[in-house]
Amino acid sequence: MVKLTSNQQATFVKADPVAFVPVKGAWGRKGATNVYLRAVNAELLRKALEAAWANTAPKGLSTGIQGQVP
Image (tube, rainbow, N blue to C red):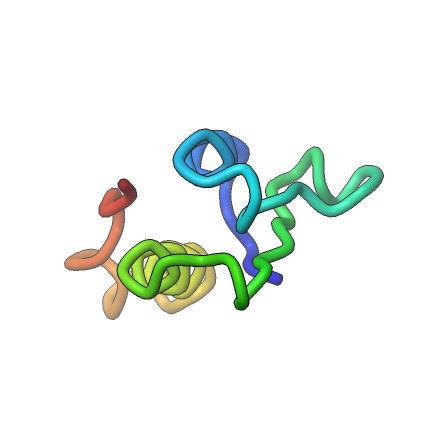
């Protein structure tokens, strides 16, 4: 599971709807996204992990990563 913004979630789900699936319920509507590792492309997974990290990392650390989604 990765913690994305709603916009990021929509982008990743559109890019690979088999690998990225919103969590059911309110958490999913707020960006929580299941990632099916057997189905995901390594490069897309890397981008999702970077986006999720940037969403929760201290702002001074995450400024170089933010906005890098597929």
